[in-house]
Length: 217
Image 1 (cartoon, rainbow, N blue to C red):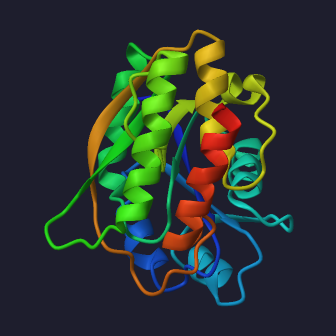
Image 2 (tube, helix red, strand yellow):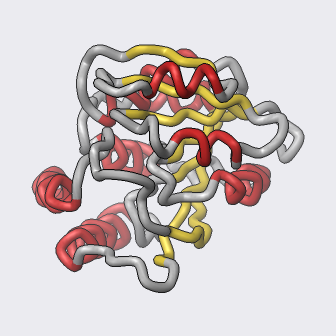
């Protein structure tokens, strides 16, 4: 599996400032696929300049952007990672290697020193993951902003949420399908530039967590 071709899907909304650094860190041999989700800055142009393939997704929402990227991916394995510089693409090969023994591998964010991670975002994530462990038997502690999975298997799950609930529905469907999900620690640092991103601001993260909790009830 480590030698298997991988497409890295990067859902983007106004990430022109962060993209050069993120794309430079994509592991050798991996294919970067930027999904431009209605950016008003130079996201698409910057992505192309730095060697990424770009697709446009007009329907707003994190799930819309991720799904468009997965559909457009050409490799048998897809990795999804935020494009704001908070996660290091260099961690992806560790996750891909674990697909030898798992159906999906996710990154559990571990904040680097000095990072300000809003308490309400952390609390919401912890509550949702506790519910996932108790109700669905998934040994997870984060809502997987970095994940790797086999493309065809992911599409076959039929995830329908096209907004912030996409990662939760993915995990719930994976549990229902009997998938083995593994979680590895990854560094989580400050974003590059502002907070405009497909997955939203800190307040958006809290709202998403509330929606996740309702969906699990």
